[in-house]
Image (cartoon, rainbow, N blue to C red; front, top):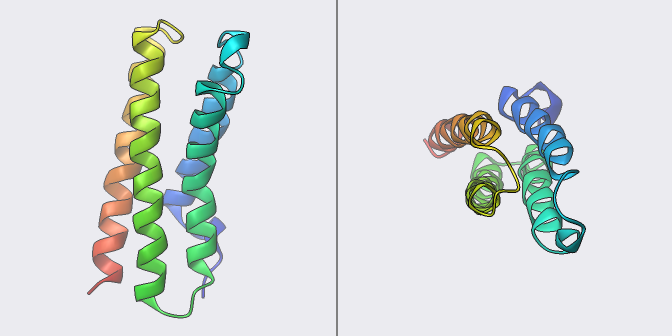
Amino acid sequence: MQDFRDLSVWQKSHGLTLRVYKVTRTFPQEERFGLTSQLRRACASICANLAEGCCRHTDKDFARFVDMALGSASEVEYFLLLARDLKYVTESDHAVVDERVREIKRMLTGLNQRLRR
């Protein structure tokens, strides 16, 4: 069992979550319980799944939570694309945040592969 805060992928995911909270402050009020909420929850879910997985006693159990974190990262990727297409975020903001999500997905995939060996 390890401290989730020591995982670089958790650190990057937490940073992404903070950034997403900042970006979504400018979303239209009518999206407060829609896209804003979904995007924030999916982002926080990446971190939460990593935190929960770290306390599991086997690598196989931890890998299951990494899989869920990867699914949440894919949700974030889509919600950001939707926000861009709806003009809630600029192209440049989307590009920066999207690259962070892709990096996190690569890291999660690598962690998952190591855990399943």
